[in-house]
Image (tube, rainbow, N blue to C red; front, side, top):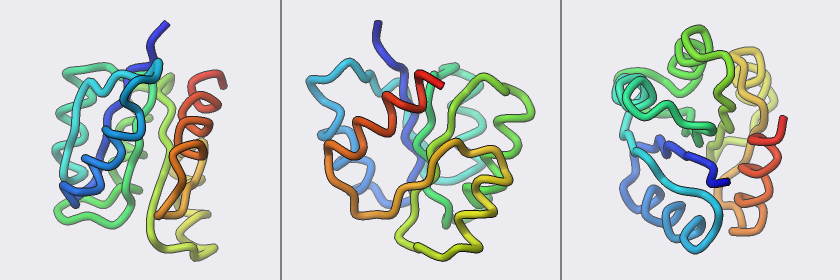
Length: 121
C-alpha cells in the first residue's frame, strides 16, 4: 500500500530533490507547501500519512505548523528536517509531536527508511 507524503520546505529545489528521492518507491507525493500556513491547508486537503516538515520557514515555522497539524490530525506522522543540528531545535520538534528528526542534507536511503518507519509507528 502506498504511503501518502506531503513535502513542506521553503526551498523549491529541496522539494524537487525529495520528490526525486521518493520516485519509484511506495511513497506518493500528494502535496507540497512552501511555508507552515500553506502546509496546514495542504494537509487538510490531502490527509497524508506522513509529512516531511522543514522547521525554519517564513510565515509559520515548521514547529508551529507541526503542533497545529497534530492537534487536528493526531494520526499523521511528521518528520522534522532542518540544516540545523542543534539540540534545542531537535527538542522543540519532538515536543511539538514530530516522530523523527533528520538533518539536511540526507541520503536517499535515510529518507526512505525514515518515511517507512514513521508510517509504521
